[in-house]
Length: 132
Image (cartoon, rainbow, N blue to C red):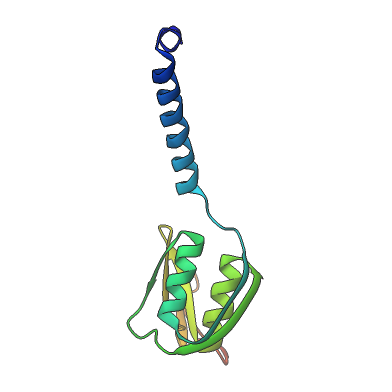
């Protein structure tokens, strides 16, 4: 602190200004939105909508190649998870998070789970489930 007192006034002001500028830059970079206030799209390619959502929430979204189509949507007071769900589910798409990255893909037609204890397979689809 004594070093700052011994500086000429213009140097003290310059160093203080640079320090405050650095702090504001860091806080700007780490700021992220918690909710979308109001956002609408009309006949917009879904990948473009995902790009806008990723920029708003400061996240990475990676859509599969088969995520295509034009969409009309309106979002008001929605969180990231709500926004993605409202956008993707009606179209048969889902997202999953791996290492902080959101991957978007088609919803699987069915899911197979093997229980090692019972040595049974469970097959779940959109229409119900089977066990064998």
